[in-house]
Length: 152
Image 1: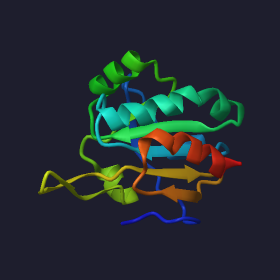
Image 2: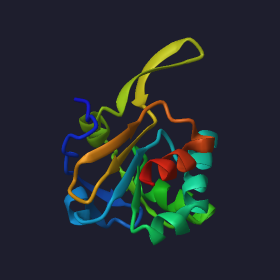
Image 3: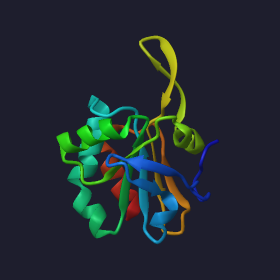
């Protein structure tokens, strides 16, 4: 399945780094940045998360919720969040079912080997739960600025 712009964003229930359950529907009325990333504490994922962190005051001022999603465990997320002082929740999709539901899971290649993994993708979801913008093949270094531009 692939979630496209102007379609309803599928609801989900995932645990964050503290073991607290988050569902997309609980954020109705607020815009949500739902970003899927491959792995905690790796170079690209750290760059992406830290850029969201550095721009967090702008998101918060606009009433935007940021949720990061990867197949890592809540324990891994807790270490990553603490190490880099990330001010937003990281959600554990250990069986990658939410990644698959959103179309953020698929074939990847590295060093000539093909494998299944997280496709770095971000969804901007409005307060009514509709997908406003989809960013695929995200470049971590400039991504937060791209998202902020889309919100304006």
